[in-house]
Picture 1 (cartoon, rainbow, N blue to C red):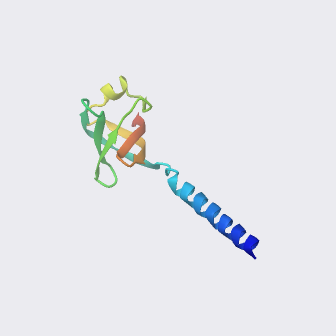
Picture 2: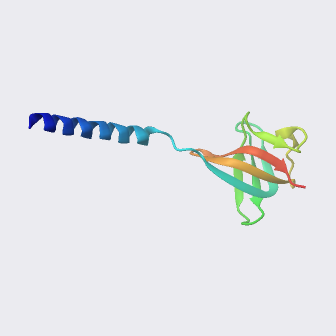
Length: 106
């Protein structure tokens, strides 16, 4: 009987370790999509911009990083101007939204 008890204890330990490892894996960032007008841009410190969502009227702030792609916006981040109508595909991260692609609407 001692062999079965040892195997059960070992199996329970392996299951617990696997569960713990699964919880340690960071969750993927949730994708977000917003269309709207640029309200403001912050160039110093954390590069970010705010838009007013066309559908909800909600004001949304996005950070940009070196991986952010700009489509049909000459100058990229420098080309973002107040009032410009854009579409933003981003990711929700623990410290806010990050823009993955920013595209000028036609």
